[in-house]
Image (cartoon, rainbow, N blue to C red; front, side):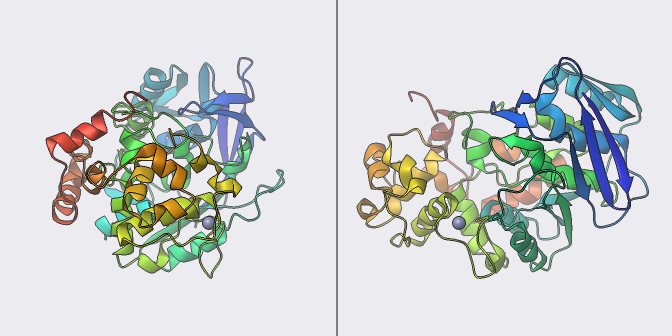
Length: 409
Ligand SMILES: [Zn+2]
């Protein structure tokens, strides 16, 4: 694989070319197979930059091309030995050319989507600048996802009143299948990475919570994952980001979505929280799968019946009519144990299968301490103090729920 950037003012064009051994079907770190739609994309920064360290441009490119790289990645400028070594050791990919000195920075920025998890991070780190990724159409790939209102999310981010950088990109359209999206999850940070020298960044905070970091939630593993290859500091991506002077920081990595939802809705950014990609200025759509899932969590923390028009027969509710395992299952257990009248909702069947109780899900209201211990030094104490004051830590036996997750299923 060869990856090269060209710039035109604040617009960065990434072009990549496959080597003979590469194919257009690749594999993401989480195991998902992805098919390439096109071999170029753009990242529009808010202003032209005088200079960007080659490790930053290489890392930004790597978040896009990694799934399709089989043996070797050749960047357009020499990178540091540390970055090349991190790619070689973590991915088994030869990386070069080598010849730059390592970079460092000092501030922590938040990769900010506007969803409850990243709002919780923003509430925890009130002085940290936000960097928001906004999807824009690709010049050569038809946009079959026009209901995705990235413009609304960017507008909400601007209303936070926080120091904000909005980065626009079409990089999600490099994916043909399963659908447009980040080639690697880390590509959401491509703009923050390119801006890192300009903003003097020494770390990037992500809103990945306990389910993603430790329980293997979502579309991938469904078990305890201390060595999570995407989000642990010692994993392949953790080491590559650190080598570029941008360690990944997961301030909410030790708490569940029940906690991030509570923190977000109790924060000054409450009015700007939006997890739905389809809603407009009037609010979230209320009928997508994400809205249904988040409504279950919100109803649970507010101790009220579910407010939804979605019935069990709707396609977005189909998975809750099947037996577990489910992606994000810990939160389904949490919600089913706490929402009054769950037997009259689309989650009735799931609730029956899971048999969860308030007692069996109480651990989801506290912080898993190892998530704090793995935070980089400059930011650990601030997050630890926040958790001690606002959330509290799991007992030893509660932590066992995390560490036994997925066993016997
Ligand atoms: Zn929705």
